Length: 523
Image (cartoon, rainbow, N blue to C red; front, side):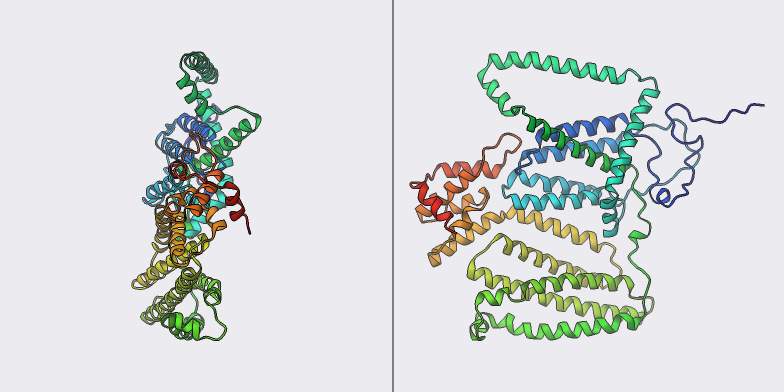
């Protein structure tokens, strides 16, 4: 009688008839993929990391970010399509929920956000797009449908990178186990031959043609210790991020209760009484604000000791906090308020609808304050950005009112985020620095006053608008300072706005550079 046990075949993971049900909490919620990573996954991630190391300019927005986004997306798509075949078909199949279909739209939004650095030169705008791209990227790879699922994706990312690295190593070990022991040697030999051929023929072409030599010098930077460190840093970070993303797409953690839109219910009076009192407080505040909204400049002038600046500044940030907290309150009530009985549903619609409608008036009040302030003192980045955030709050509140028709709205968080992403992309298309410069140019024509230090700190996106300034001395001065603060670009940092700005700046040379620097540095 044989005592031999069933051992996995070469390259097979787990026991013969698995996968067996996991027993740990982590195993049940995040069991991991049932097969190792494919060779295509490892090669694609490595190739995308090399592209990122050679392309990404860390000190500016540029074409390299867009190229890296395309390379990373291609690597993740390839890792998802090409899979390792099972050594022995599993007797028990485990269905995996890979999330909603809108993940393709979120992936596209991630690429578009990173592409803004190719067309807009404003660093602050690109940083916002880069941070937002992490959110849309998380939405693209997560299988959950709620904000809590997205938050879980951020939290498990370090573990996903670690497990993903082991996952890829198992795939490489599987290749060796299937008779591919010579693969690493052949890969190294192929790499060495490729480098040798490129070096020999590249040197010949460089010596044969001066124009090709200049193109080669522009494409390949001088190699220093800091260059090698930057390549290693960017490539390593990209490899870690892509490994985590590929692992999460191959084995997303189960959302479980995170996608539930309803929590443990409370008594009707426990939520209705405090919310009704809050509605009354909002109504009293709105009643006062209506006189402000319709009073306009007459209200400011007639109020003792109140200037335009004090009127606009006073309470603006408090109103922003009120609006944000109101959204949190609305989300909490929608989750914990009972809705089984008809009376509960009617009460929920009335109270939350009234609170959302009153908050919309507060949004209008905050926007009005910002409009008065901007009309008096001009547009700035912060004022423009805050006004856009307030407008987005208003759109979300309108969505809350629409969601109140059917009470349930699992679509609301993702649609609200989509509205914010579209608003940011719309802001990028509108060219915020250009809008600010245009606003100050128009104000100069009316008041003959201009803020040279602030305008000189704008990005090259503002150059076309500043070129329309009628005062020749101020115009050439601003263009000269912006031009001298804009460093030259190689192909990695190529940017359409900076390229166009250089042409405009060359047409308006400054007559007195010393006076220009004195004007922009006077504060």
